[in-house]
Amino acid sequence: MRLYFAAGEVEKLVKICLAAGGKNMLGSFPKIVGRANYLSKAPISGCNSFFLDSGAFSAFTLGTPIDVQQYGAYLVQNKRWLGIYANLDVIGDWRATHKNQLYLEQLGLTPLPVFHLASPAEPWEHLKDLVQRYDYLAIGGVATTQFTVKEKAAFLDKCWSIVGAEWKRGRQVKIHGFGVTSNWAVKNYPWFSVDSAAWSIAGGCGVMYKFTGTGLVSCHYTDTDAADFKRRNALAGSGTTRYIIRSQINVVEMLKFADFVTTVWKHRGVTWDA
Image (cartoon, rainbow, N blue to C red; front, top):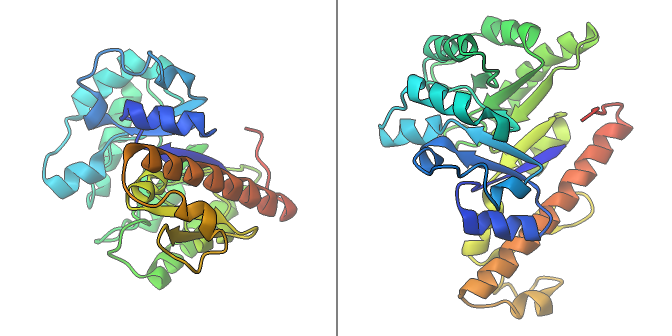
């Protein structure tokens, strides 16, 4: 399972992540678009793969829509620096999302289609069409707090039943999970890739992750019950240095977890060429 670390639009965080071994970054288009040559320069040029998210979810929550023509022009100009780039999805309107997909493809682009856990629900026939037409697509909306774990699991069960049917026909379609890094979600479904901003957000809140051998657990630096309390206590308090250390610990532990998940799915018969 390939893990992308979000916050790729912040150079300082990219440097922190790269130094800890996190080589795949995800950045948000609205936060990058006005910065000339951002993708071609260090530290971004040191990434193995850079995933550009359209920023549609943030635009939706803030009420600031993104212009698909501007997004398309940026992709055309910078696609050589991008490993992956997502379609400009329109939250709550799958038809408008699909229209954007077709527009970007007319520009010679290959954006990742996105299917959402949303209200109102997107039609399952649309997902079937996407799975049959594309080799790699994304599922969004799973990270939101709008739905319960039970509701999310039911949605993902249906998604993967559709994907699995295509696998049985001999096409191993790849799926990316936006914001999907919870233990249950990555162990129950064979994602090709996922992304998470938790490594830096948690670090800023004094929280560190630890890979237990089977999953990730979190611990605040003030938690005296932690097995590795001495190490964590040494990082107690605020300050840039401690934040960097905590965030880098999170990167290392999350990479261990990603490797574990990859091994779990390999034992279940699911492997990826790249």
